[in-house]
Each structure stands twice: as C-alpha cells, then as structure tokens.
Image (tube, rainbow, N blue to C red; front, side):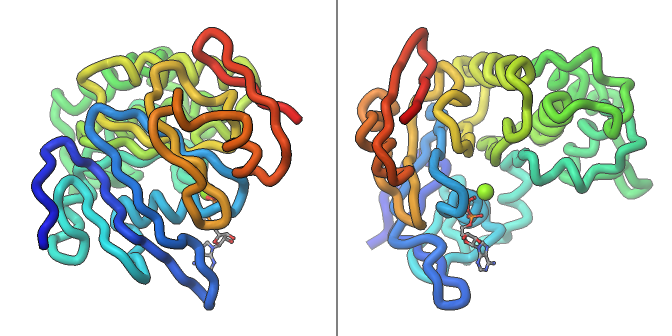
Length: 266
Ligand SMILES: Nc1ncnc2c1ncn2[C@@H]1O[C@H](COP(=O)(O)OP(=O)(O)O)[C@@H](O)[C@H]1O
Ligand SMILES: [Mg+2]
C-alpha cells in the first residue's frame, strides 16, 4: 500500500540498509524529517552520518529499504530535478572550491549547483542580489570581495552555507560544518544557525556533528547514530539524555543543559 501523502514530509527513510564490501554502513534505518523541523544527527566518527545524508539526498542508493525525498520516491523520478531543491554544505566541500575566486562569486555559483562561474551559466542582477542577501543572513556580507582561499575555516563555512541557500532549497544538509573551527568561529556559526532555525522562512535543516556543544538553540530534533543504527531519535528534549549519549559514544557520559545549549563530559 502507498504511504498517504504528507505535505510536510521532506525526507523519509524506511528500513534502509546500506551494505558495502559485506559491511553494513547503515542497518534498518527509519527516519522522517518534516519541513518545520531542524534536525541534528549526532554520533561518533564512522557511525554512518555522512552515508545517511547521502542516501537521503539521492547521491547514494540504499541496498535495502525505501527512500523518499520531497515526497518523491527515489528510483522513480529524475533525481537531477530533486537535487536542485536541496542545499548541501560542509567541511568536505571547501577543497573543491577555486581559492582565487571572490566569496560572492562562490555564493552565486550555487544558483546552478556548480562551483565555478562558467559561460554556460548566466547570473542575473537578481542572482547577485540574492547572493549578497544570503551572505548577509550568515553575518558574512563583509567577506563578499575576499578571495575564498584567504578565508579562515569558519568564514569558508559561512560562504558555503550561503552558497547552498542560492537555490532556495526546501531542505538544507550541513555535514560537519563546524569541524575545525576555533571557539569564536564556532560560536558565531552556532548563533547564525540558531537564527536560521527560528526563521519560519528557512528550509528544513539537518546538521551533522560529533559534539553536543555545536547544537544551535532552536534546533528541534535529534537522531543519535552509532555503528550504522539509530540509537534514538525524536524531539531533542525527549531524546538527548546522558544515558542515550553514553550508549551512542560507548562510554558513560554526563550531560548538562544550560541556556538552551548542551555540554557533555565523562
Ligand atoms: N563506499 C564505501 N565503501 C566501504 N566503506 C565505506 C564507504 N563509505 C564509507 N564507508 C565506511 O562506512 C562507515 C561510515 O561512514 P560515514 O557515513 O562516512 O561515517 P560518519 O560520517 O558518521 O563519520 C565508515 O566506517 C566508513 O569508513
Ligand atoms: Mg561524515
């Protein structure tokens, strides 16, 4: 029987397993993201977080199970059209960017989901205006004319997130956007994402991280993932406990919540 249509459904994974070289990278994963939700995917290195995002965004096919993105069944539709409706950014992308291009040019290339301006793509005055707007939204308007290669890691992440917003995505996937940032840069990005989270015009967001300290205020849901399985998922207030976190990372952990932020230690 077909699933009833849920207008707010953005991502749905049903019984998804991914097997590579005889190993389960994901095992029997069920996960649903809705348009008004802001998700954190948290788990140790190698847990399967990036794999889960790649399956959800149609860049990797599941070995078993079913995937829907933006209400479309994966395998039944033209994925290129679907991919233009999502935004993706993360530390893994920075290496693909030409370092000599100004930040604003990097942002505008997101319009056609490419990394360099080419003669095949024309950018309108409206595109350039939008690029400035997105930089501004991430408190990075002052970086517009700086060459990408000269930016700090935190500044690069802001530019990449602004770039991913150019297609006005219906879902924004951020894979380890905060890895390698110093405390000040991390806190600036947490604040920007916190503002994005409470903006009703923002797309659904999925933020992958290893650290509870990186969870921006305003994020609503969390999936804890370890060894390819979802340990627990749902509203952060219900799911994120010391014992669930301990089970995810395989050691006893303490967890404290203060001023809508989290801290964990052992
Ligand atoms: N194409 C692949 N073939 C085999 N193993 C892979 C492949 N891609 C990832 N892996 C392995 O799958 C596990 C999960 O990877 P990944 O999803 O990148 O984890 P995470 O993002 O949580 O750190 C890791 O052990 C990784 O080495
Ligand atoms: Mg990863």
